[in-house]
Image (tube, rainbow, N blue to C red):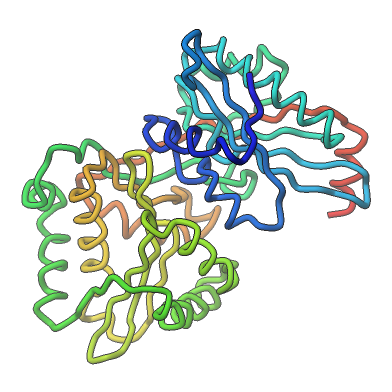
Length: 336
């Protein structure tokens, strides 16, 4: 186990970016987005000194309570059947917990809800785990809708699998004169105006514009802003990131105006095309809920996403919590 100094982060970055269980929230660049957290990078090496596991640990200081929260979003990154590596990384987690007097360490790797052996690795180490948590109970969504097995396919092959109606709507939007543009930060205002209105309309919280700007700047080669225009007017937009074999549609918004020209279908087509061009295996539409009573907005998003017939619903196990100081945790939770 080793806690890396910043001058050695690039080795870790290349490991995560090329690992099947890697994700953009385990990139060191994610720490630039979450600039109100401190961070550390832990790695585990094999006998040849190559990295075999790693974790970006975000550290949220709670100075008023003299404690901190540790969190590895979609981490740690390792081969999930390798408990030895998980144990080695956990040595580093405990070292950080001592350094920051942390009350909790939270992890939510891409482990599936039915992967009982992998879940048992965490519970055997003393992590608490509550199966079947709802969308509101976890930081990251447990249910994602995604198109798998893209690698090696042409865009024509992918389009032949999305379903006749979706394929028609994609083409219809382009025929009506909608243009989906890959934009720079200069177009962020166009997107953000739609994003604000969408959040207000559909009653979900939104990120500040500065947060989205940090996102695009933190991943200059890996993140893209797309905006669809019709007669010079922005109608919808999305921010996607391509990392570790996945293209993830992280933020999206659409206007109520000119829905008849179906711009969201053209935008999805454009982002899926980027995933195919980038050699990704997965296009991830990101989080959904499957119960309309739980979150009507996200259920409506699910209704849209599942029109893509070549996609599937993937459900992750959820969060694993290691409680270092129950008393401090109670103090923090009472103050929320």
